[in-house]
Image (tube, rainbow, N blue to C red; front, top):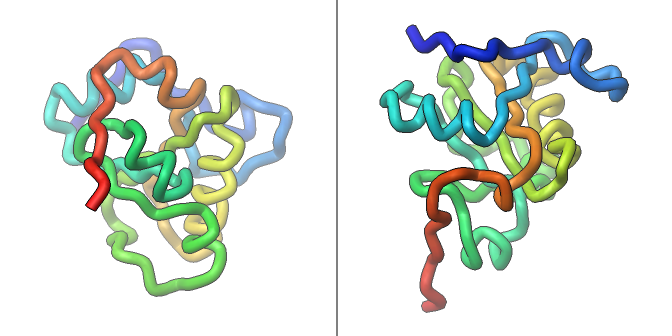
Amino acid sequence: MLVLASGLARAGEADESGSAPGIEWVTPDELAAAIDAGAGLVVVDVRSESAYKRGHIPGAVNIPLSVIQSTTAISLVPEDLIVFYCDCPKGGIALKAAEILHDRGYPNLWVMLQGTRYYPGTLEETPEE
């Protein structure tokens, strides 16, 4: 099991947004450390497809918030540890996605704060087809 040094706060405690319990915040550095440690995370970029292609965390899948909002048929396993991110400094769009899936019964959700610009690793680009 992965334990992060700085600890994670419940989203409702870390932010005045009133987000759902069971969603935890993670910093870009903590996420990078978890990925490097082989934590078995599913990393989800909730930005648009064009933003994802311009640069995303290596290994991340792109499921835009609009898709999460409009369908329950998404390719995520509820038992997995799922980390959402976007470009918002407070992770607002990613938090919305996490709250939707939390309401659908997904118990293991993290939201990365600060967005991709603070991710310590090199972002991966997807070439246009």
